Image 1: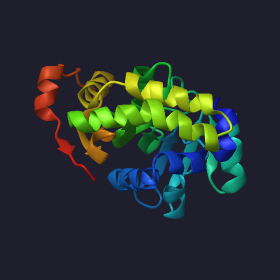
Image 2: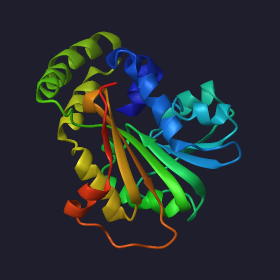
Image 3: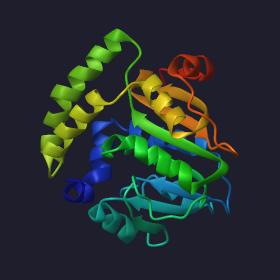
Length: 238
């Protein structure tokens, strides 16, 4: 499915998000706070749009994705970026390989997302950061209802006109609705071994950016009730 939509993937994303995708990605880059010379894993990188800001600032970024079609499109556009085919649940990298790891709008597409969180922990260096951007649950009921209507009615109709594979965007809408909310994803991170977990809501909770850190040594999972007292959600409409 992703191979089929690869040629127009970035353009369609801009249309369906009304231009918000680019802003969301900039926020992820700022949250990563990496410097030139550091090594970053950009998982589910697709065509490399999310990887480009790191490469442009001198960061050694590896764009990893399961879709060969996406990687081919990205490599043609940015031959200077290291594109590697890989399974998020069994990453082809050694332990402690990256200073930081990130995944944007891709964790939802992994068959075993919890295992992917564990794999990203494994390949990230102790003290390294993880940043996840993913569609989430709007925090205002009225906004949530309007957004659901857009997902299930308007989005597939628009995709029919601009995408080569409209069925892929029916899947997109359904997968977003089925995805857990912000606190549940935070708990998954804790279960995987990540610590210092926070999240920030964007566009009223349509997207949530979670941040976490790999501890210097293993710690036990934190129960969800205690975790909710520890994480610091930032509910922002913008």
